[in-house]
Image (cartoon, rainbow, N blue to C red; front, side, top):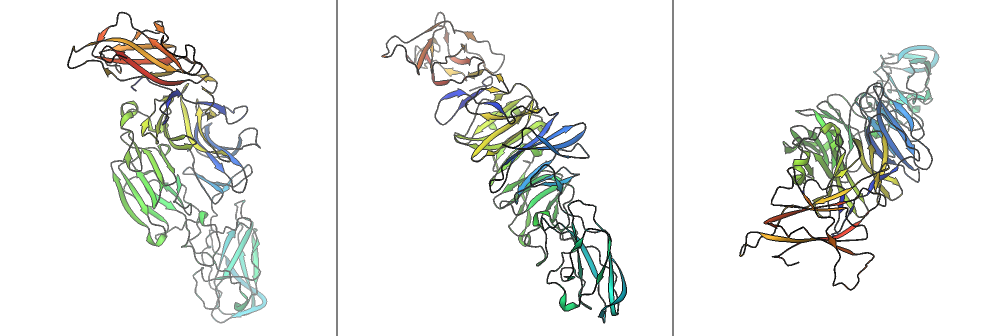
Length: 581
């Protein structure tokens, strides 16, 4: 097929059909957004349902909406950013994490988000003594943390208090300041043993801790032997993520990787201090020995691989390889095959596909976009979306040219690009995911404003029907042993009852450059020597040109009408004198 073909579906069955349409609104009555920039499906564990998540830029700010399928009638706003930066998302631990370089949020359920991570107390606790109580020969140091009793997550430790010095039968006054973070409902206080190490990971919790999240002066009368076995987090081990975006997870979902400018950040796992508390996915150890790597160029996107995470810059693809923090290494992966836009990079399982800086499509390090290079050479990367869609008989890599409203589909079964899907206008936020149990759908924002799912049994885009055209390359008619030209006798199409609305041919001219075709639709007849003269499911139509024109090569263009109905085309045959039918 050549340029000009569109909205045709070919599969390993070796048939042609009208491609399915984005006919099903995600909502019964679609919400009209302003400019959708992201969409994803968020499946919950244990029958918790399936969420459609939309990121819309409206009024100069970035907004995130959710809709729980089967429960919510329409999308519900759950967070408004202070900036217009689009959010990137990662799903792990039954939680949706999101970041746009300014706001770092998480969503578990309900209708709102909370901060991702808990910031540590900014100042050390202040210390005093009063009344009677306990004694120290060298003195004690204190730190405290903020905690969420529901999730169990805990901040890094506060700065270290001054030493109490020698204490003789006194109660120690420890003054703490409450957190303004609404997710914090507890304060935990940790103390050294008398003369013990000031490393907070070896400090133990007071026996009457935790305390309510309020400004308070706590009285400590716990002897060393009665301190809790619970030890504190480090000074930087449980820090919240740096404001960043370009989120992905490693192959196991054990870590979340984010990026900002030329630095990659990643959450903690096995390296968290033993015995300390905290959700690993919310702990981003910071500092000189923290969980971050710098690169020579700005990070544009990140993608999951089987043995690490790919880091895509404009000029090169790097990699964080390894499965433990202790064996992580930075290494080069591909030169001059980087990416420009995070939306044009997709991961599924261990496969990574991306649109590179030269507007070529790659899958797992190999170019698959050679055939469509001319079509996408001027694609706007900022409006390009790429996803991997695996559903039933469709195994696709899908590239959306949002500015021009075209979806290019690479069939991984046949190793071929299908003719483009032409949408009724600009589009955005192409995604693939599970919208209900076992039902994986391809979703797009038509007009960049309304969310629609692909329906394999419907053939319209948001209510707009579309035509379908197949155009062939030039096919040889000449016989080198006879005349260099041959007469075109007929073009034969075998279809179901839905016959073409137009059949045309072009002789000895380039069908890709201002083609001038000859219409022979009206010169149609049925076969005369056929057992079934009126078949219901296999119609053979013979189209004959006037005067059997001569040519060396012939191209064919067949059009099906703009209707909300599919068709099946079994064969298209060109008959010339040399071929004899």
